[in-house]
Structures are given as structure tokens and as C-alpha cells.
Length: 158
Image 1: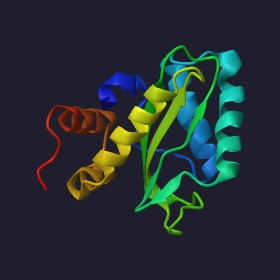
Image 2 (image 1 turned 180 degrees about the vertical axis):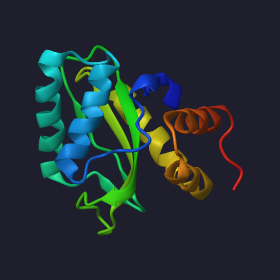
Image 3 (image 1 turned 90 degrees about the vertical axis):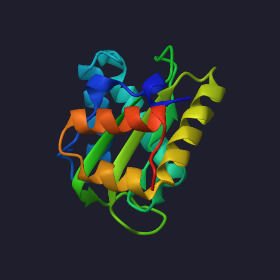
């Protein structure tokens, strides 16, 4: 599975304005709502599902990265977005570091395979230091889109 299979191009945010975990999640869900990927009457329920998942353990996986995610019956297919915070946000990460790169995923409960393949793709790409460094330096949604396309097409030469 590639980023192009699940990342909503119109929901990508290069400059997250949030300064805490919940507002970051709300801002990314808002971006998916604006892009028409989720319905307005389900947005709050999706935020709650992601926050509930965070209670089980932070999705701040370390090295400045978080992958907040949840399964939700309102989506028909896996959908996600990418956001960057220049300042970094305290996300209760495993390594205690602030998070700059966010990959948010929402998937239908009956499609666990897609969810796992997306998480696998994200985690595999994030092992690439060059990819992470370029993402953190991205100044626009277009920059991020280009990086995701490059990762999908051939990855990065470190």
C-alpha cells in the first residue's frame, strides 16, 4: 500500500497550528472534513475514537513522529492525512520528544488488512532519515505531496 492509496491530498497540512495533542487531532480531522473525506456529523465521534485509542498508549512512536489512528464505522475506506508541526507538539511520545510529523488514519472496522498495510507503509518510510528530514522541512502542502509521491514511486536514497 502506498501513501497515494490513503492520504487525502487536500487534507495535508504543512503548518499545524495546534499546540497540544487533542487540538492537533482535531485540526487534522477538520482538514479531512474540509476535504470531504468524512461527514460533519461524524467528525466529533471520530475525534473521540482517536482520543480513546490514545488512552491505550500514545501513538507518538518516537523520533518526532506520531501515527494517531482509529477504526470508525462512518468511513467506507481507509483515509488519512499528513501534517507537520514546525515547533513540535507534546504527544506523550515513547521517547519523550515533541512530535513534528503526524500521519493520521481512519479505517472501516471491517478492513483491518488495509489499516495494517498503511501502518506498515508509514513505518517503513519513516525508517528513512532523509524522508523524515525533508518532511520536517516541508514548507507547503505541495512540498509534502511531492515527498509522498517520491516515497511511493521509488523511495529515497539516503
